[in-house]
Length: 259
Image 1 (cartoon, rainbow, N blue to C red):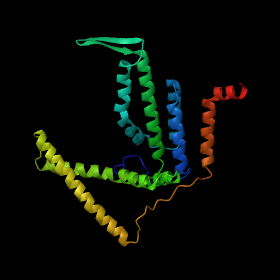
Image 2 (cartoon, one colour):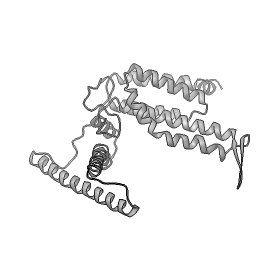
Image 3 (tube, rainbow, N blue to C red):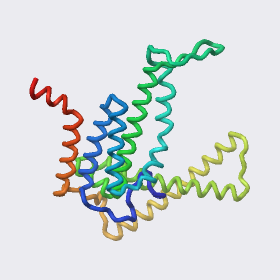
Image 4 (cartoon, one colour):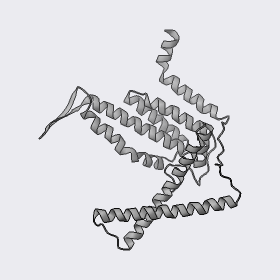
Protein backbone atom coordinates (compact mmCIF):
# COMPACT_ATOMS: atom_id res chain seq x y z
CA UNK A 1 0.00 0.00 0.00
CA UNK A 2 2.93 2.34 0.60
CA UNK A 3 3.58 2.71 -3.14
CA UNK A 4 0.01 3.32 -4.28
CA UNK A 5 -2.69 5.90 -3.77
CA UNK A 6 -5.36 3.17 -3.89
CA UNK A 7 -5.59 -0.27 -2.20
CA UNK A 8 -4.46 -2.44 -5.11
CA UNK A 9 -3.39 -6.02 -4.39
CA UNK A 10 0.21 -5.56 -5.54
CA UNK A 11 2.32 -8.38 -4.15
CA UNK A 12 -0.75 -10.47 -3.31
CA UNK A 13 -2.55 -13.21 -5.21
CA UNK A 14 -5.84 -12.25 -6.83
CA UNK A 15 -8.74 -14.66 -6.42
CA UNK A 16 -9.50 -14.39 -10.14
CA UNK A 17 -13.11 -15.42 -9.56
CA UNK A 18 -14.53 -12.46 -11.47
CA UNK A 19 -12.94 -10.37 -14.19
CA UNK A 20 -11.72 -6.87 -13.21
CA UNK A 21 -13.98 -5.36 -15.88
CA UNK A 22 -17.11 -6.93 -14.40
CA UNK A 23 -16.08 -5.85 -10.89
CA UNK A 24 -15.58 -2.27 -12.08
CA UNK A 25 -18.86 -2.15 -14.04
CA UNK A 26 -20.81 -3.69 -11.15
CA UNK A 27 -19.30 -1.15 -8.76
CA UNK A 28 -20.28 1.69 -11.07
CA UNK A 29 -23.89 0.46 -11.27
CA UNK A 30 -24.02 0.06 -7.48
CA UNK A 31 -22.65 3.60 -7.13
CA UNK A 32 -25.51 4.86 -9.31
CA UNK A 33 -27.98 2.98 -7.10
CA UNK A 34 -26.44 4.59 -4.01
CA UNK A 35 -26.58 8.06 -5.55
CA UNK A 36 -30.31 7.90 -6.37
CA UNK A 37 -31.46 6.73 -2.94
CA UNK A 38 -33.46 9.37 -1.08
CA UNK A 39 -33.84 7.59 2.28
CA UNK A 40 -31.11 7.23 4.89
CA UNK A 41 -32.31 3.74 5.84
CA UNK A 42 -32.09 2.56 2.22
CA UNK A 43 -28.56 3.92 1.96
CA UNK A 44 -27.51 2.29 5.22
CA UNK A 45 -29.05 -0.99 4.06
CA UNK A 46 -27.07 -0.91 0.80
CA UNK A 47 -23.86 0.00 2.62
CA UNK A 48 -24.47 -2.85 5.07
CA UNK A 49 -24.98 -5.23 2.14
CA UNK A 50 -21.70 -4.03 0.60
CA UNK A 51 -19.91 -4.63 3.90
CA UNK A 52 -21.35 -8.14 4.21
CA UNK A 53 -20.50 -9.11 0.63
CA UNK A 54 -17.05 -7.59 1.00
CA UNK A 55 -16.44 -9.54 4.19
CA UNK A 56 -17.42 -12.77 2.43
CA UNK A 57 -15.01 -11.86 -0.38
CA UNK A 58 -12.27 -11.20 2.22
CA UNK A 59 -11.93 -7.51 1.54
CA UNK A 60 -9.11 -5.83 3.47
CA UNK A 61 -11.47 -3.51 5.33
CA UNK A 62 -8.78 -2.03 7.56
CA UNK A 63 -7.00 -0.50 4.57
CA UNK A 64 -10.21 0.37 2.71
CA UNK A 65 -11.86 2.14 5.63
CA UNK A 66 -8.65 3.97 6.51
CA UNK A 67 -8.53 5.39 2.97
CA UNK A 68 -12.25 6.19 3.03
CA UNK A 69 -11.74 8.14 6.26
CA UNK A 70 -9.56 10.59 4.34
CA UNK A 71 -12.75 11.95 2.79
CA UNK A 72 -14.13 12.87 6.21
CA UNK A 73 -13.65 16.60 5.57
CA UNK A 74 -15.81 16.42 2.43
CA UNK A 75 -18.50 14.51 4.34
CA UNK A 76 -18.41 16.83 7.35
CA UNK A 77 -18.58 19.85 5.03
CA UNK A 78 -22.05 18.83 3.86
CA UNK A 79 -23.27 17.70 7.28
CA UNK A 80 -22.09 20.80 9.17
CA UNK A 81 -22.64 23.64 6.69
CA UNK A 82 -25.74 22.62 4.72
CA UNK A 83 -28.16 22.95 7.70
CA UNK A 84 -27.38 26.69 7.84
CA UNK A 85 -28.21 27.33 4.17
CA UNK A 86 -31.23 25.15 3.36
CA UNK A 87 -34.59 24.44 4.95
CA UNK A 88 -37.64 26.00 6.62
CA UNK A 89 -38.03 24.12 9.93
CA UNK A 90 -35.82 25.80 12.53
CA UNK A 91 -33.73 23.29 14.49
CA UNK A 92 -31.33 25.58 16.36
CA UNK A 93 -30.75 29.31 16.52
CA UNK A 94 -27.62 31.12 17.68
CA UNK A 95 -27.40 34.81 18.52
CA UNK A 96 -24.15 36.29 17.24
CA UNK A 97 -22.82 39.88 17.33
CA UNK A 98 -23.48 40.30 13.59
CA UNK A 99 -26.87 38.57 13.53
CA UNK A 100 -28.69 35.30 14.10
CA UNK A 101 -27.36 31.99 12.82
CA UNK A 102 -30.13 29.46 12.20
CA UNK A 103 -29.85 25.73 11.50
CA UNK A 104 -32.70 23.98 9.69
CA UNK A 105 -33.93 20.39 9.98
CA UNK A 106 -34.26 19.91 6.22
CA UNK A 107 -30.66 21.02 5.69
CA UNK A 108 -29.42 18.58 8.33
CA UNK A 109 -31.37 15.71 6.75
CA UNK A 110 -30.03 16.58 3.29
CA UNK A 111 -26.48 16.95 4.61
CA UNK A 112 -26.64 13.54 6.28
CA UNK A 113 -28.05 12.01 3.09
CA UNK A 114 -25.27 13.46 0.92
CA UNK A 115 -22.59 12.55 3.48
CA UNK A 116 -23.74 8.93 3.69
CA UNK A 117 -23.90 8.76 -0.11
CA UNK A 118 -20.32 9.99 -0.44
CA UNK A 119 -19.09 7.56 2.21
CA UNK A 120 -20.91 4.63 0.59
CA UNK A 121 -19.67 5.37 -2.94
CA UNK A 122 -16.07 5.95 -1.85
CA UNK A 123 -16.06 2.78 0.27
CA UNK A 124 -17.60 0.80 -2.60
CA UNK A 125 -14.97 1.78 -5.16
CA UNK A 126 -12.09 1.34 -2.72
CA UNK A 127 -13.36 -2.13 -1.81
CA UNK A 128 -13.64 -3.04 -5.50
CA UNK A 129 -10.13 -1.80 -6.27
CA UNK A 130 -8.74 -3.79 -3.33
CA UNK A 131 -9.55 -6.97 -5.29
CA UNK A 132 -7.48 -6.12 -8.38
CA UNK A 133 -3.95 -5.06 -9.20
CA UNK A 134 -3.01 -1.80 -10.87
CA UNK A 135 -2.39 -3.61 -14.17
CA UNK A 136 -5.80 -5.32 -13.96
CA UNK A 137 -7.48 -1.99 -13.23
CA UNK A 138 -5.84 -0.33 -16.25
CA UNK A 139 -6.70 -3.41 -18.35
CA UNK A 140 -10.36 -3.15 -17.29
CA UNK A 141 -10.44 0.50 -18.36
CA UNK A 142 -8.88 -0.46 -21.69
CA UNK A 143 -11.60 -3.08 -22.19
CA UNK A 144 -14.14 -0.29 -21.62
CA UNK A 145 -12.50 1.64 -24.50
CA UNK A 146 -10.93 4.37 -22.38
CA UNK A 147 -8.41 6.32 -24.56
CA UNK A 148 -4.79 5.21 -24.29
CA UNK A 149 -3.63 8.74 -23.48
CA UNK A 150 -5.91 8.78 -20.42
CA UNK A 151 -4.71 5.33 -19.35
CA UNK A 152 -1.09 6.41 -19.63
CA UNK A 153 -1.65 9.52 -17.53
CA UNK A 154 -3.61 7.53 -14.95
CA UNK A 155 -0.91 4.86 -14.76
CA UNK A 156 1.79 7.48 -14.21
CA UNK A 157 -0.28 9.23 -11.55
CA UNK A 158 -1.08 6.09 -9.58
CA UNK A 159 2.42 4.66 -9.87
CA UNK A 160 4.74 7.64 -9.49
CA UNK A 161 2.96 10.27 -7.39
CA UNK A 162 3.30 8.06 -4.26
CA UNK A 163 7.00 7.63 -5.07
CA UNK A 164 7.29 11.40 -5.41
CA UNK A 165 5.67 11.87 -2.00
CA UNK A 166 8.00 9.30 -0.42
CA UNK A 167 10.98 11.11 -1.93
CA UNK A 168 9.74 14.41 -0.55
CA UNK A 169 9.32 12.97 2.95
CA UNK A 170 12.80 11.47 2.80
CA UNK A 171 14.36 14.79 1.82
CA UNK A 172 12.42 16.65 4.51
CA UNK A 173 13.73 14.22 7.12
CA UNK A 174 17.25 14.75 5.78
CA UNK A 175 16.81 18.52 6.11
CA UNK A 176 15.61 18.20 9.69
CA UNK A 177 18.58 16.00 10.59
CA UNK A 178 20.84 18.73 9.21
CA UNK A 179 19.35 21.36 11.49
CA UNK A 180 16.49 22.67 9.36
CA UNK A 181 14.03 24.61 11.51
CA UNK A 182 10.92 26.66 11.02
CA UNK A 183 11.83 30.17 9.88
CA UNK A 184 10.29 33.06 7.99
CA UNK A 185 7.66 32.34 5.35
CA UNK A 186 9.87 33.47 2.44
CA UNK A 187 12.73 31.24 3.57
CA UNK A 188 10.36 28.28 3.87
CA UNK A 189 9.03 28.94 0.36
CA UNK A 190 12.59 28.99 -1.02
CA UNK A 191 13.43 25.79 0.83
CA UNK A 192 10.32 23.99 -0.41
CA UNK A 193 10.92 25.26 -3.95
CA UNK A 194 14.47 23.92 -3.92
CA UNK A 195 13.20 20.65 -2.46
CA UNK A 196 10.51 20.16 -5.11
CA UNK A 197 12.86 21.20 -7.92
CA UNK A 198 15.51 18.74 -6.77
CA UNK A 199 12.99 15.91 -6.60
CA UNK A 200 11.65 16.67 -10.09
CA UNK A 201 15.18 16.83 -11.50
CA UNK A 202 16.09 13.48 -9.95
CA UNK A 203 12.81 11.96 -11.13
CA UNK A 204 13.47 13.16 -14.69
CA UNK A 205 16.97 11.69 -14.70
CA UNK A 206 15.61 8.42 -13.32
CA UNK A 207 12.85 8.26 -15.97
CA UNK A 208 15.40 8.82 -18.77
CA UNK A 209 17.56 5.97 -17.47
CA UNK A 210 14.55 3.64 -17.19
CA UNK A 211 13.34 4.61 -20.70
CA UNK A 212 16.75 3.94 -22.26
CA UNK A 213 17.06 0.63 -20.41
CA UNK A 214 13.64 -0.55 -21.58
CA UNK A 215 14.40 0.54 -25.16
CA UNK A 216 17.66 -1.43 -25.17
CA UNK A 217 15.71 -4.49 -23.99
CA UNK A 218 13.44 -4.34 -27.04
CA UNK A 219 10.37 -2.60 -25.67
CA UNK A 220 8.60 -0.27 -28.05
CA UNK A 221 7.00 3.10 -27.50
CA UNK A 222 3.44 1.90 -26.89
CA UNK A 223 1.66 0.78 -23.75
CA UNK A 224 1.75 -2.97 -23.13
CA UNK A 225 -1.65 -3.17 -21.47
CA UNK A 226 -3.91 -6.12 -22.21
CA UNK A 227 -7.64 -5.72 -21.82
CA UNK A 228 -9.38 -7.83 -19.19
CA UNK A 229 -12.02 -9.91 -20.96
CA UNK A 230 -15.16 -11.39 -19.37
CA UNK A 231 -15.33 -14.73 -17.57
CA UNK A 232 -18.14 -17.23 -17.20
CA UNK A 233 -18.45 -16.55 -13.49
CA UNK A 234 -19.28 -12.91 -14.27
CA UNK A 235 -22.83 -14.08 -15.01
CA UNK A 236 -23.34 -14.74 -11.29
CA UNK A 237 -22.19 -11.22 -10.46
CA UNK A 238 -24.62 -9.59 -12.86
CA UNK A 239 -27.47 -11.92 -11.84
CA UNK A 240 -27.00 -10.85 -8.23
CA UNK A 241 -26.96 -7.20 -9.30
CA UNK A 242 -30.16 -7.69 -11.33
CA UNK A 243 -31.84 -9.32 -8.31
CA UNK A 244 -30.84 -6.36 -6.14
CA UNK A 245 -32.25 -3.87 -8.67
CA UNK A 246 -35.53 -5.78 -8.87
CA UNK A 247 -35.75 -5.83 -5.07
CA UNK A 248 -35.11 -2.09 -4.76
CA UNK A 249 -37.55 -1.09 -7.49
CA UNK A 250 -40.13 -3.83 -7.05
CA UNK A 251 -43.02 -1.43 -6.54
CA UNK A 252 -42.17 0.70 -9.56
CA UNK A 253 -41.78 -2.39 -11.75
CA UNK A 254 -45.19 -3.72 -10.67
CA UNK A 255 -46.80 -0.36 -11.40
CA UNK A 256 -45.33 -0.35 -14.90
CA UNK A 257 -46.38 -3.95 -15.60
CA UNK A 258 -49.88 -3.83 -14.15
CA UNK A 259 -50.69 -0.13 -14.37
